[in-house]
Image (cartoon, rainbow, N blue to C red; front, side):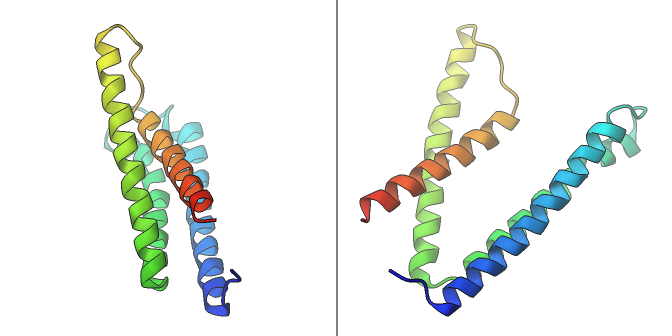
Length: 132
């Protein structure tokens, strides 16, 4: 099915906003690694180390705007896909918590974000293939 002009315009706006948000995140992350880590401990260092979250918040804003722009069907589809991915992530991370009690290495909380991204991509791919 071919996308309408409105769908293409909405998609381009989303990719532009998300891309800018990700660029802000990446720039702040690099700056944090280069300049924040070596700083003396204190409030300023904490603020600098948290600064990449500005880019993350902008990403959330871009996603929320996209969900408001798309039609009801796509909004429901995206939210269902994300809910399934969140449930899979919860199951996987909860299971790994039990493995940690068996001596497996502790993982950083950053791993949860990567698992959520991977499960979201997996769920969207499987759902797209099933709709063919």
